Length: 480
Ligand code: FRU
Image 1 (cartoon, rainbow, N blue to C red):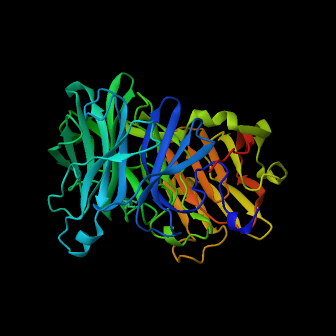
Image 2: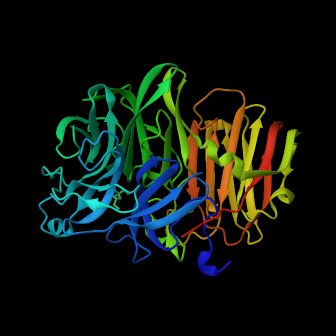
């Protein structure tokens, strides 16, 4: 592997070269899942934003496509969404893809009027291959709000209209439209509740079904102010009537407690199913992580479902089922006693740190998984019974000198009282994703081991592991 490719993930999307941040405009169309993303094609740090484009049919093999949207006289192309306009409401053609995004105008920004972000649209009538910007842009001018961005648009069937969920500084503003071109302000949400450690960005609003009942979920990314520092994504559950979102509680929940899942939203046009992907990074250090050819990756695509836990509606996030055939078990044990420490190093020695580890713990006892390498790097993942929390500890997991706050232990609450603890840990070249209790508690962290991970031990007092398996990923067919 060439040195410049060190840390290239096997089964997470990365652009062949240069900088990426937020996923944008994800839309499903005719067997293809499209991913657009904040992209700077001339450098390894954030710069004038374009929309990069990639596609997948299976969420494992990704194909990079030509850049979809370039900056223009109205500004750079910031985050946004794409809808399939089945009924030709906008007049660009039946089934046209319509992108709704923020134009960020640097000249106006320099003039400090606070009106440098506004919403514009573009359309594609060839399945996302080429894009035309609408001549009447912007479609939603700035009313005088400095942070006025990241439109996520959905179709609201009961009133046959589009709803735009927009981040407006310290709150969310909902707009509606019949044609994607003229927008009416409906209501505001959130200035007096939720987490406010930083500006609100990249929202998403969608319904999920729970036993025949519709629960609306509102995702809101914030930067900084995350539970483990820097950027993170909070969510609220509630109701939505086409005009207003009413939350069930004033306190936010966190979609992911790790440090590295930001600005994620869901695919459009997937019916009742909601598939989420995030940017696997944190603004605290995103510009300085030690990759050499590209910078930035996406999280694993996750299926979101709703559950009722102790009377509260919570979102579960699990890797999409499409990924299952891409894992091959290399070690399985129906049941095994840890007896202080179980050494599984021989099972992972050849996997070069790319693996999935699954097990169920017979009862909720503290445990600690250690992934190690020959260089002395150690990554710990586990559960601490005393404070009922899961953790990922990357303090000594590899290169960390690029940012003082990077080498840390991150914690997350366990949200269920179930006796069994179910764990899935997925490692790629430079990331770890922990799905605990079937996705009730999720943590995503990046880390940069100096050499491949070759040691694995699980330690705990007096517990049995059931359905233990170590799996390796197939080789991805990556196309640029
Ligand atoms: C979130 C964000 C968005 C913005 C984009 C710019 O990471 O700050 O609010 O549209 O990145 O690249």
